[in-house]
Image (cartoon, rainbow, N blue to C red; front, top):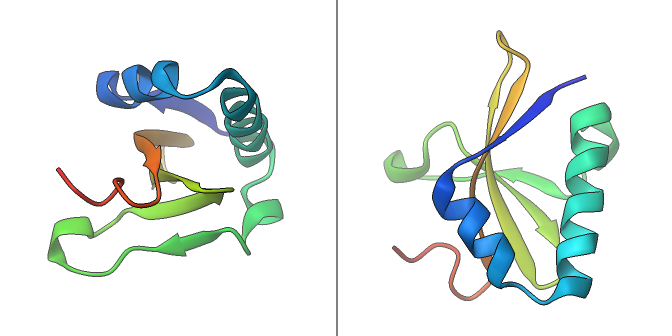
Length: 89
């Protein structure tokens, strides 16, 4: 089982999302923490030097940018945003 860790920016972004989507996102993150292999169809590695080591998890129209740290068994939540805005700074 992995531990979930949020960056402050990701936590703030999650709090601004509609409550029904917050529940869905939290449910997916709980599944991810328990068994990352269960969501392999929803997770894709990001391409490019800027996104090296990051992946995205799809939840409806929202994307969760994650970094998986195998040695520490931590999944770092980097960003949570709508699919049109998630890759912008």
